[in-house]
Image (tube, rainbow, N blue to C red; front, side, top):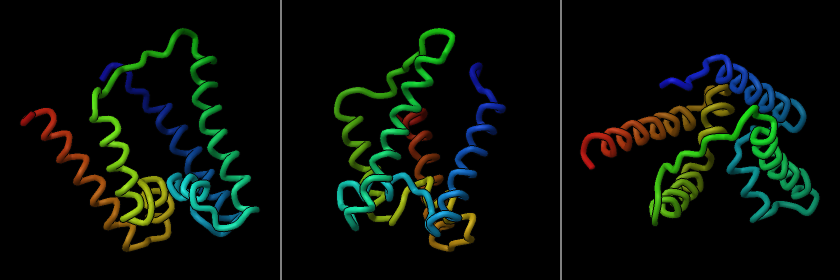
Length: 140
């Protein structure tokens, strides 16, 4: 792929890891995005919602900042159309609920804690992703 930038991936990975480390150090909990966002929909306490909303706003603000700070327009590639997008979104949300966490929670925080459950979850994520790419590129 022409646009692969290993430096950007390394910087992004380090930033995500540092954010997870800070969250663990400050609150004793991991930083899984689905758990943070899920706490807005099903709050565990009134004082718990504020930082979660700010986290979500920060995610949106970061995306808009990238769009506005780029030298030129951001190329947007449509990956899917029709019912594929909502079905994929629902399936991903259902998977995070069944798996008790998302790729960031299990892959970054869980594996760092040597969690056997996270190792199985990440293995399932990867196997499903590999199978999906194979099916889409070679069968469908």
